[in-house]
Image (cartoon, rainbow, N blue to C red; front, side, top):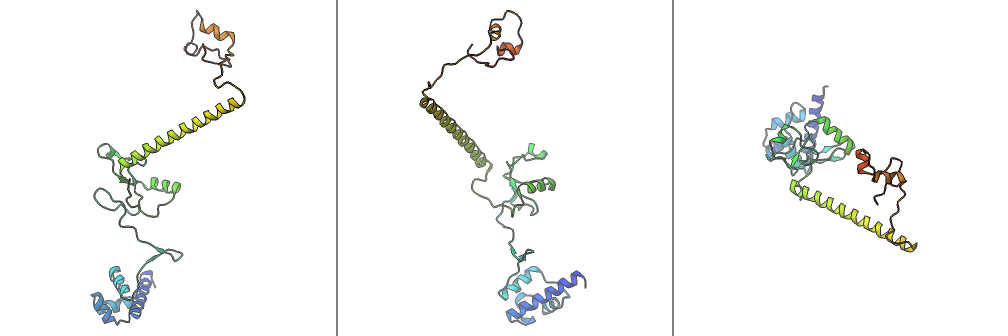
Length: 232
């Protein structure tokens, strides 16, 4: 028995189960579905298929429903019809992973002549697979959320950057206060006088009459100077 014949027989057994659960004859089921009694009889015998929509209506008559199951028997939900769409209102290809238009660079020559889209995707499966390897396979295409527009996302990034800068400033100031407190506890002045430990050769560079290299003119210290202060 080939696979197609076996599949039709399994379908026939399902149709029989539906009829038994719904307590309907072949003629009664056919009448309810708007098909011929012969179509129901042939489906039960494995001689033909029935469209999925017809099977779905038949299952509903018996209080049942068709579902996709994974290898462990868990039900797999259908893809969300409210998922993001392109500018033409079309759903994105199911096998690809839509992303925001400002994630990575919207590549392709069209980026020079078109406005950046709110959502896009990588057409190159190799790039898609590399991203999936790095972050995992998204379970579905995401649905639109508040703040998805490119302008709102740019504003959120700017606000996050400003907040991060302010946090770094607060941390630096806290460290400064801690160091000042430590100096007070040790009896040290808050603003110590600068000291210079440059060798005499650095003074010679400050008042040199001969030619100097650009480095020596910019930083008047000899190469082995341990101080390199800015007092002079």
